[in-house]
Length: 377
Image (tube, rainbow, N blue to C red; front, side, top):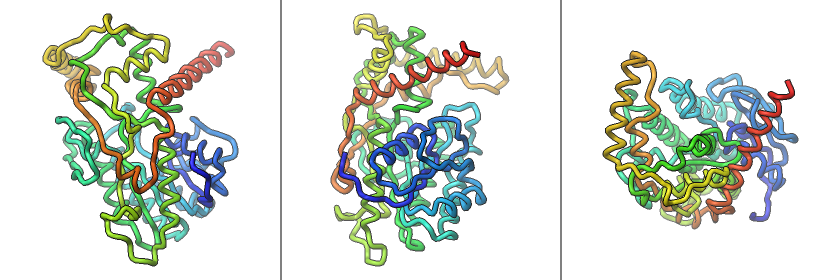
């Protein structure tokens, strides 16, 4: 880790999630924050001692203003975002949190006049149309915007893109400095999406499945690396004098108002990552035992499954086997992080495999504690 420097009082919005809790733990360990607070809609997960917690929504003016006035943060990390795969995830929720919540946060910041720096967690998904390969993309690739009547994954990315635009446009308004960090698929300790799903599939025997030839490369981001990059970005922003004219956007000295892709800088074949998670969970699969399903075969199965679920539920539910999964399984999804390395000084602190080992161990330990808790009741 780099040598610590003070960030002053820090508020992490969404600090009980996977990335947010990693960021909180790193800030505590590094002693960069003179005081550390969290605002989150739910405070049941990933709490740590030494942190002040406020229960509330980023979409609530009252909740945000209360947290700002109490915490008096110099730095805000806006990590909050709806759980994409949760049953409550709807276009309305995406708008409420990602778009309206971000605008509410900015309005409250202007009103309170407290923070100097705002670091926003964006997504690489905002530049991806969801259908074609994306290879070593750089930050100048335009954002893709989608209508509300599209599929959830695309509309989620649409709202994240809208929020990122707001963050960038807020730079240097009322003395506020902003930056957006576009993370690709996140995994790590406290993660309630990527690792739980992959471990569950491995434990149920689905680790032997592979769709397509398995050559498609995929960029993942360990939450520890993402949290480290967020800290770097905050430090860099605090060193900027907002009263001076900013450097040109092409300058390697320009940080504020900019966006940066974040990955482990180590693309893996997608299915190798899936099997590595299974191996870490004690459910390893030999390559000779892998059953490869051609894409067109799985596509046909997905179409039948989608229609069957739609008919039997009268359109109220969506099949877990669907055509979106095929695109996700089989496309190349990689990003160039040269800009983050050059301007932020970013260098992944953990390899992809180290991240997998840490994340899977944490998940299995938490599951074991849950079982022990149930037995003791």
